[in-house]
Length: 176
Image (cartoon, rainbow, N blue to C red; front, side):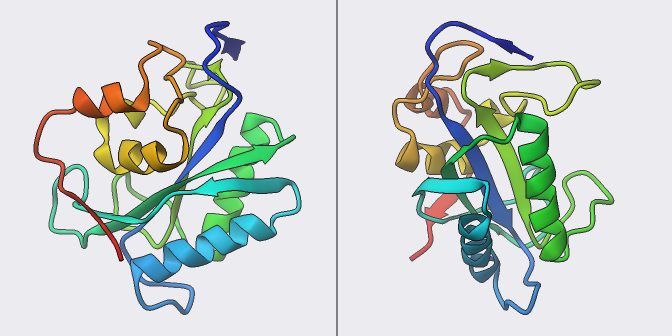
């Protein structure tokens, strides 16, 4: 893992998503809100900011139910691999079982960025920033709520520029 030295900012960003009910909760929105509460109860993780929740179509487009998505800015002394392991533990508590990529899921917690770390080596996870972060409105739009000035450490573009570069067609609606 290397630091890029471009001043991308000391932000640790985590995405939250769900498109299935589970863990005794009847909607993906309820799952996301409960996951936020679970993150806030973790002793080694401090939630600094939470985005609104958004409803989005599955990517890639399929007949799966739509997702509830959000993001949090956190502070932790855990190194990236340990933080990702903790996120996976929380997913498992909610009933997440990883079987097939892009499958419907009760809960998805993705480590999007860890300070200005750059890691593109699959043999030394986690990949940072998240390799598909720049392609997804359902990730970028919630990030705009909590980390407006964040710059992607790989190319130094701000979230608003990354959003503007997305192709049309990624439906996204705020959840009230």
